[in-house]
Image (cartoon, rainbow, N blue to C red; front, top):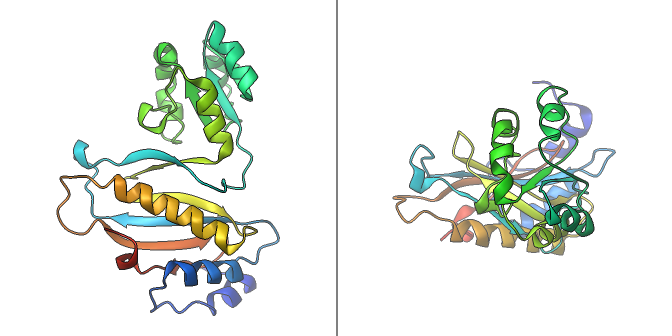
Length: 231
């Protein structure tokens, strides 16, 4: 894969044989994020879990102390009084059955997070084939299937991010934006690491966090010294 001049110059700053401490990596990532837009900084953790076993499936959510730097659009599936509650709490879209054909047939996906009350999951379930592969399906573990719509929306707007194992047993989580100062990125990073350590499956044998990389949208990956932050 051929990389552009900016990437090549940024990559020269990174020693690919080195495993960096979190503080060093965060300082470096800000120097390598040189695109003309505010790049997203992401953490990618390769785990020793086997997602084929239910007890080793990792999924949850955590509110980052400094948010993600992204404005999130929220769709809420609700009915009755919960519709008014969702609108009052700041949901971008609220609805029920009438949204099914719009999403299924028209391909409408102008939202980043889907929240649903438990009594609407029968409706939302019909969208499983569309929302599932995009990671948009509401889930109780992530706090997106709940009767407390106000709290769910407030948490998401405050910077709640979901984490889950992908098919390769890797977890991908945003840390913030390249414009964030190092302290904010470091605090967001530590919040995610603490949440992942708490989510470690009891049945897991061997190394939990096998390797980890942080990268910006257009920049090179920076390898982290996982021994320093995994338990």
